[in-house]
Length: 342
Image (cartoon, rainbow, N blue to C red; front, side):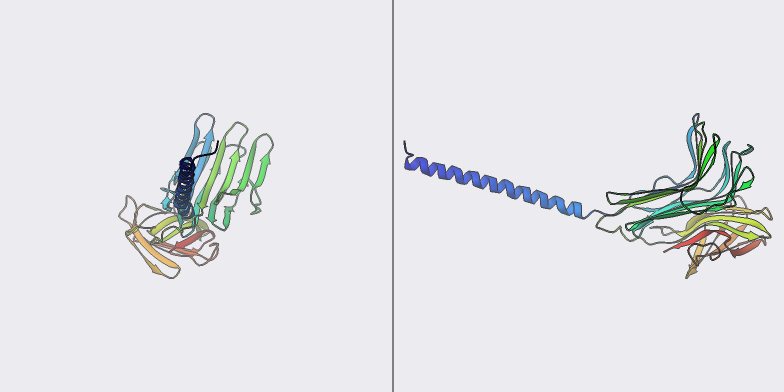
């Protein structure tokens, strides 16, 4: 039978309602999608990083990490670890610098130690006068390097090539990786880890010395601008034919309005050791900065001047220290680096 006029009109009305409902749902979907797209498109660049002086892993104790900055938060900033002397059964060293930072579209970390002895007192004892690891990550890629000064195994000098992942082995005894580098680039994240030395033994013991990790996840929005003016440094100058090791962080760190920092300085020719975990003044212009404070536990004050003249800093950057007791030393860096961050 044919449809009546009323049935035909009702069918048209129902069809119109269905079409309207479909259109409404489609519009809601478009609106929902449009509300999500800006959130995805407007992602902010984030950072991560970590630096430590020494990590010792054994089957009995697990992993113990010393002079460790911990993880840099996603918003960036700067973290430095308290300087100290490392004295373990597997490793001995004087910590000069452990610092990680993230701002201005890059993440960067650095760790420096001096007077390193691994496997002390054993036939395969490893020594180094100075070790430094450096990592840097930007949206364009990553870079890293290690500085290794006077590395010896069982009293024999090891020629350091400077290339990543140089390996020295004593079969059945140990494997030593020099300037160990691992890097990746996935999902908008650029990542790099640099270890100056990575020692492994067949019994499950591993010792990592001077480790620097940096990564950056790049969004469409740059991170907020932060006010900063601070200097970091780790290295040594020559004083009376011996090493004078130093490590410091000083100035106005990212987002901070008061001067802070720390200093560790050891002159092996005279025995002078300066350690301070506070700064009272900071000033300078151009590539040089001067900072001062009081030596921890003493009435002696210090003044340090550092100049970031080139990259790398060896042979170009300069370091000067003066104490209120009359001591003083200065010179161009024989090893290490000084960096100004503004």
